[in-house]
Image (tube, rainbow, N blue to C red; front, side, top):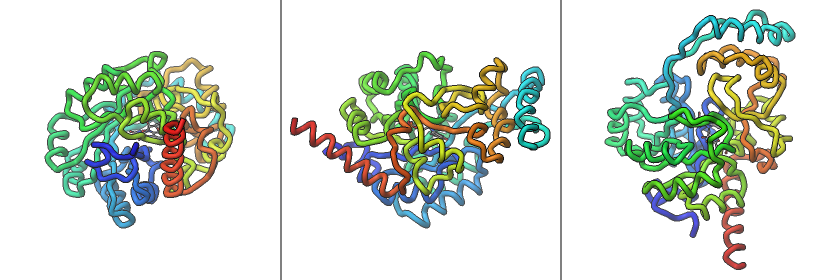
Length: 355
Ligand SMILES: Cc1cc2nc3c(=O)[nH]c(=O)nc-3n(C[C@H](O)[C@H](O)[C@H](O)COP(=O)(O)O)c2cc1C
């Protein structure tokens, strides 16, 4: 049975389907629905204080007795310099003026880290899994989480990154292909144009490491889940397709864009947040790319572009999406989506076994 392996046994999962933790777009309701359906729900902790993060975990626990993946993207304090921020603010001012939004704010942003408060909260609340994006935190943090019995994972965008994560003691590795929506997980500065697609990356990572490998990037229906298992995955992590679920915290403009994507509507760019991420291309991205300006350091660039989302205009909104957005064909609920994904995968693999 494709759905039973060492990874699912260790995490007590019915289905090896992880809902990607997607910052503030992932909600306790979404994660609980996924875990209740037999997958593993994920909650992004980006930007939340330890108290807020604990409330998110408690909210999940009120709705589900299943496992939870609490996620921490890691990045240094942004270095903000006027030579970069002022031309960028001037360029964005045109968009702000057109929508009557006033002055573009001063850029701001803090480091993304697992603070002492977050660590003690995690050790106390014990989510089944803690995942990281953009590398791993200090060894002592990993040891403390592992001593608490928490399963640790992080993403790799190349074989070399996967080997580094394994050396640092992760329990499993997410192989993130370039198809993926959201930020590139690279923590070694892999050039975007060199990042492999999942079809090439996944079997090479599987061959290179001993720990279970989770496939991410473009997995959105039964065929793509089945393909990931044939290529050696122990589980899949799905992001973009879960944005079509009612429980996800997705703006109306973003939802509208996700209803009519094509295979070639997305672009990877750093102009929205300061780090490369994949979005449905729109006028804001086109204008900032045409400007040739460097974005302010991540995530401070987001403090300049995010106010434009208040307009409700999809041409000015960050439309995070992966290349397989068009494979997620229906607005649905998370439990129904997990059920249909698992059933479609089983059917797909049965059909191949019969052939
Ligand atoms: C809207 C959005 C936000 C994301 N935010 C995070 C995040 O905060 N942390 C993280 O580890 N991965 C994040 N990801 C990346 C996912 O973990 C995963 O690599 C990706 O969604 C897989 O590709 P797919 O979108 O084609 O399914 C995000 C993805 C999306 C689409």
